[in-house]
Length: 128
Ligand code: HEC
Image (cartoon, rainbow, N blue to C red; front, side):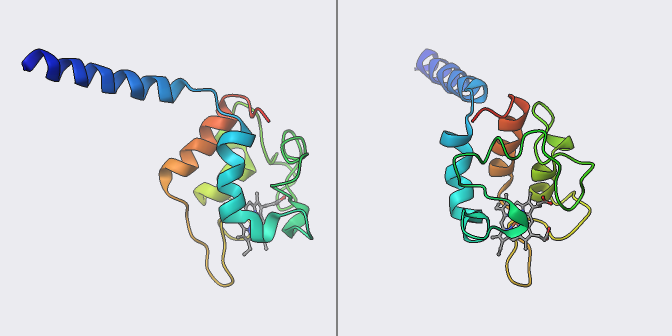
């Protein structure tokens, strides 16, 4: 009894660690979230601030590309989430405009786990 309890805890921890190491890609882990939360305003048709998060070139248009709001800050700095304007908008640590996703008059904050997925994707090199 006790041994099986220990074994299942070890198994659970193992799964947790594997998940944390899982390589993240934009297409699989980030885009579906953005499609749901940001697609109304940042889709291919007249995207706000010219930021299309859903098109085929979305990642290339963000990595090492200056943000409109704060051109000295890149939208995505591969390997450094906190230096990435995209992450700052999600974490609401940006300087200009509203936190994302915004509504008409409000700005909401995504659940922390989702913001962390975006951070991990950037930290791992922002793979397409
Ligand atoms: C209701 C419309 C709306 C939604 C939904 C929305 N945005 Fe925005 N977004 C805007 C507008 C308008 C701006 C420009 C004004 C500002 O920065 O507040 C903007 C600006 C941005 C910028 C800054 C672009 C730059 O170059 O400076 C980023 C990054 C961004 N949004 C990411 C997101 C992400 C990621 C989501 C989803 C989690 C999202 N937005 C959801 C309307 C929206």
